[in-house]
Image 1 (tube, one colour):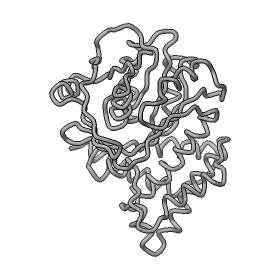
Image 2 (tube, one colour; image 1 turned 90 degrees about the horizontal axis):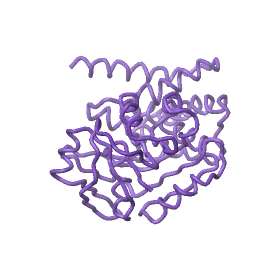
Image 3 (cartoon, rainbow, N blue to C red; image 1 turned 135 degrees about the horizontal axis):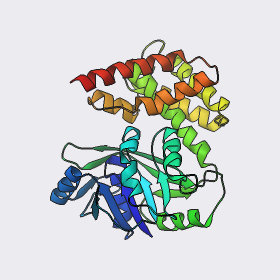
Length: 307
């Protein structure tokens, strides 16, 4: 199976490198500047599961090639729309598209461009960051990808994807409820991202001050209400896991959006929070804490763009 990884950033670069290390046929679709960097340095992974440097097979954007069998899309959610033409250039009628983006809005963009059939669901669970030199550092040991048909069926093509993912050095599994799992992750990212970005601290920082835990629970309440109205309520274990993650004593937990914010980088505000707030409005639900976090991040984005 010919696999294309769209993006060689912190997420796509990590899982793509592990797949390549395991002998899979992997190519990275990258822009010319990233291609030049990777040709100089290789793709360097620093990880508690073992460091790794590979010389990746690269395809620069704008270069034609035969269609790939499987395209794994691992970009910041705000980078998807500019990449759609590049993805279209490397896909054929039977190409499978598995997105590992945050939020849910990307499904609409992909289905709108490519139709219903090619687009599967996907979730990736990993904490990685890109260094200024272009290397990838894994910040915590968990590493898992989940994929499945959006209708919940276990199709031959999902089974084929699973066959190439197994034994690649990370946890991988088919999900027969992948849409629920995508919502579960979004609930954590939206509540955790809003909480840490609005209050400017890790979960542990917030728990340590009077009122912090109560605000965290109210943030989760808002997100759970939206998910429930959308038809994807979390089960008791998921609800408890989200709340425990956001209220742990001395917890270093922070979302990638908070890390990007503190680093002065663009953030996925519209994709993670804006879409959640829009859906809440459609259901007639009030989300005052999410609203405040979203407005704050929009101000930040405007200031960033004005530099």
